[in-house]
Length: 383
Image (cartoon, rainbow, N blue to C red; front, side, top):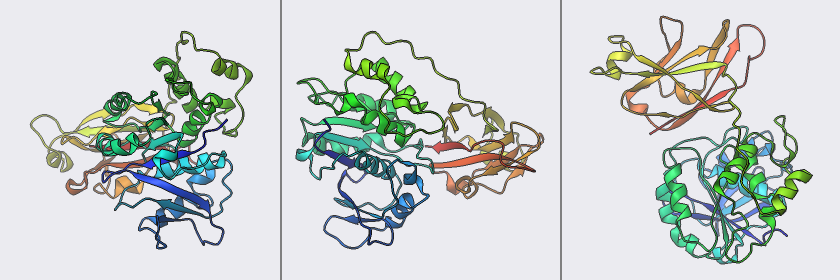
């Protein structure tokens, strides 16, 4: 049995929006976003069209045929990309046969999600003002007191505190925290068979001990949940028999979760830090050498986010293997001075004084001859 309907919440710092409708519209030249009751596309509708275009990020979801859609929200906002994750999840839920609710009182499940995605639907870390968005969502959530609550919190500085705050809302059933690595992993966790069954009174259909939930999140991120493989099997395949048994029986003490170390990156990235009693201006102009701190990997193809502290002057890049050059995404290039070559051959990008803002960029090692030597790394700079 699937939930009768799902209310998808698009949190913003101006207040939460409701995703009122999402319908195929073959007559549209491209997918478009509208405010409820208005025929004029919203200012950011062209970004939604690119998200949903053939070959765009949403094409990675099973069941997405590339038909243009009309997206209707209860309102709009000025700028930002944190609407991408809830909109992608809404598309995925519809493709898996669920229905959307337009009002809190109509929902069996409330989905509160925020964040931006990349071309492969990986969820980008960053400072998404989670606590502010949650504070402004309390009235909306209170309007659906008996509905289950699923939450997706991207990696960032407020994630842990936001998770504690959601857990302390005092709802009838505890919230489910979805994996934050990618949209497909979140959809797999949200639509697994146990999550589709009616909840027993006083207990969430999502409620699992924290360690078990953590194990499921790791499994989903590694592509093993619901029979997925790293090469990308169908996301809607049924669970293997052993996994079905585990869902049907009350969970016992969880087995230890063995974390798989991240693969060695093909690009080595270092933070360039101004030394004590110096400044980034002196470092950028060569008066003082920067301290170099390696940025560790946080997952497959992703580095741990770097803080935009006053002493973070820039980033240095080196290929892990000789004979390759580094390609850095335009998001970082536009926020930095032209690249400089350090004495050891590393390529340095010093941040411009007026461009210190949250951003996510990619980097890749490209051999002088032949195809790229590995996948792209993504890295976030956050306040």
